[in-house]
Length: 542
Image 1: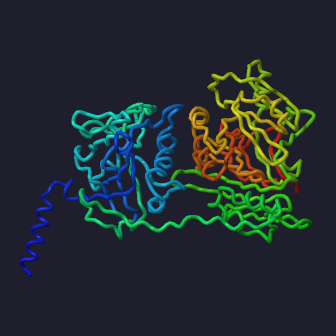
Image 2 (image 1 turned 45 degrees about the horizontal axis):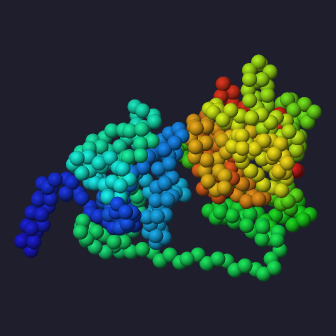
Image 3 (image 1 turned 180 degrees about the vertical axis):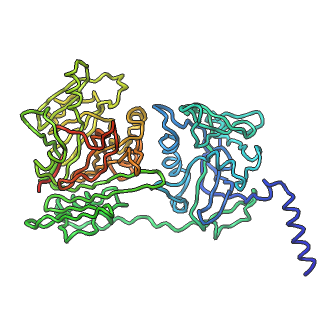
């Protein structure tokens, strides 16, 4: 017994005197597969195990796996809005991990926690990086083939997720012998050394000793393939469309879309002849409305950590309803008042701001030359001006069209004329932008160049015909700092919108439900009220 105690104490003493990088090294994990060979051949990914605790299992790739820019084009707004972040959470995530592995990767804000290491994480004393040697990483032959910057000693430079403090267009990186530096985010020869976090307990049933030659291999959960729901024969067309409109690609919000309503028809509306249902809970931030042709679910969201507050409104409507523009005075479109007054004048259930084109019209009266864009209302063309393709002023005057059939389309500024859109069936044509999502793809270049600062924002998106999504983000208040158009585009995309458009923001961005403004207007030029406007966009009458 004494001999055993002595041996344990000796081992602890030797361990305490050993280099920290060896004493606290936790081991290695084999997880996922990626291209490693120069010809693109794949092999399992080897990860350095940094920590395993209640927050999950933190891993860092042992090797630099690839080389690519953080942001190849457009304005660089930091890692959170970068191309490389979307690549890691999207293409890399899908290529490198099978469904069972994907299920073990932790998720935050709807995205898998596959990222780049930060400078702070690389410098942590308990993270296995106790000297510059621990920061160094060798590239795979595939990364070398991709052009990664490789030093004489064999290690490669790789990105961190920190923006340079001295150059806003640059990103910090690890350089030769573990030193830190920075390079323009557009450089394509800097390596990618991914970091990821697995769910807590992911190592519980792992095989292997965790050594370099015998890494931990995780036990993967069984993932059953999704079974498509049985399709009813001869289902009514309206019922099928209603189910698609409710489900769409927005499964994560499904509980909120059905909870709290009285009995609804198969299409998701109240039975014909039934009085409208209205629910308001300002404390909880939930508002609901249902009628035989319209259903609304409005939710207020608060992200305390990132100081953000915003509203998301899901609007379902039948062929008897559609979004359109409502003027304050049809005979004098320059006449303006508050949005609440216009909404109540037309007895609208739901109202929001549009493109505020009247500002550009009024500015031209002061002798300035403001391009108004392409504007049409109620099938009538008001302005149909071409836009300078080199325009760098926000807004870029991209175009959104609203159709009577309950759909919308978005276009670049000069893609179609107002006349062409009216001939295609559009009732209202708005100019602001940039367009955010089209055909399910984010407008990466547009959001990188227009609307790049954190401001109050408003946008409208379409999940399916007859199912719109309206988002309003507050700013200039103690509760919310605002967002840029990249955040807005990514939010619409994550919630299933195949089409989305950035409307005028700032003091113009307003959400009105049953005649009452829900969002808080921040202070601007000493004022905390919304701008007077000449019209509102609305749906439903009360």
